[in-house]
Length: 342
Image 1 (cartoon, rainbow, N blue to C red):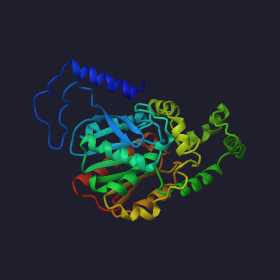
Image 2: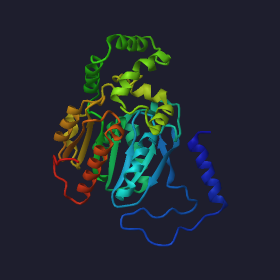
Image 3: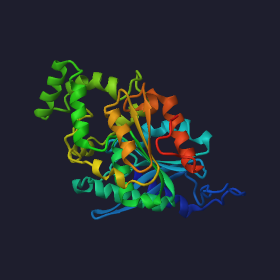
Image 4: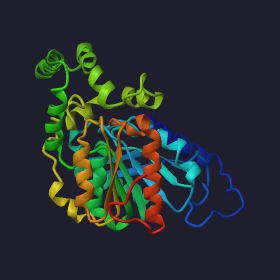
């Protein structure tokens, strides 16, 4: 039984055994109502309907407040775990937010039908999650692959959004692949040759492959040594099959189903206030991300000069100061296109 299915069974059993009344008192304006029935610490398993059957995805709510943010993790098929860092910054700001493992990820059901792993199906999933959580006029923050998903969701459903945050993700997979080649030229050519050889022969499970990528990841994925525990757990629990199918075998380029994804020409269709975030040491071209902010109708960019792909860790103070300033500016209607952050 998957972790999600086990929890569903446990919740059903608990509900059958009895319920607890919510604590007395009222919530502040815009806050989520108190949990009813069996309390789960904010965890809610959401049924997801697909052409291939019904499944469940894991979500968890933190705090309450008028500003509500749904987080979309990277991967594809990594986990919410590396985004636990938001728990250290959002609650004291009075920001309500939701962590969420997408279908195929560790805390959610992990079906094996490969036809499920498409951008359109994931967009439909996010809309089902939004509806189940009762979110409207909310903020969607996507990191890495989550940035692709957030952009696609905005193009389909931006009437539900108050604002959009695309963190450490370019708007074109071919442009990302080209930038990866720029970064590869900064590496030891013998190491790059070994990586490409192992990829060409299908030996990406060889320990030598991971070892060869170690320097690239330390420079461009997360510049903290050792990696923070939430990052380690997210890597450990990555669904490698889904990740490889959509992304390819590593972050050094892109070769899966997403390889030809490109939304540069559609950025002008984004009308909601939008923040793009890039790091100087990122796997994504920070200049491209700054350019994206000029292409949407109401955009601004946050650059993290000490940041890599996980700038929320290695340029943490700047990342969260800029992000919170953006959210508050949009909420108070003081946001202006191109505003300086943080």
